[in-house]
Length: 190
Image (cartoon, rainbow, N blue to C red; front, side, top):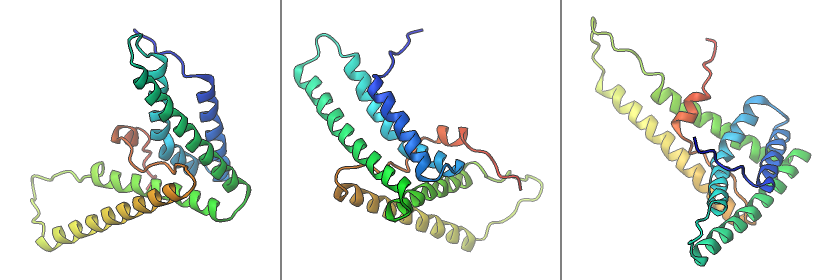
């Protein structure tokens, strides 16, 4: 089995620092901490991918290819420094940055619940007594789902605007793989 080389110590240190800062931002609340980690995980996955590409660069790689990856990683590091600064400020004060990170954690939790209710909690079909679904109920459920999708898209757009005007930082993403989503799902006792 081909073992991947370890990421650079600076990258691992940055990730550990992010995990500690994100945890302190939400006052070490377990679910909020998990939600923030899930929100920023794809960002760190992208950074790790580019770092590994640079580590494993083929000997015949063009100079422009290497320079492109290094430039991307330089911008990514700057954005992560600004993000860490934002999270540190949120952990030290209970002002606007704290409210933003708390709401980002809530949004991840809400999106997870929405996807789980959509895909995982489907009712089993009862072949004995077929029930007729009223067209009005189907229409109402489609409208509710469309409303939720529109609200999520509007929120994502606000986050992109904040990232663009926020001095070059990243606020993570609510897009995460369903495999990871269901692996982390723990049903409520009720």
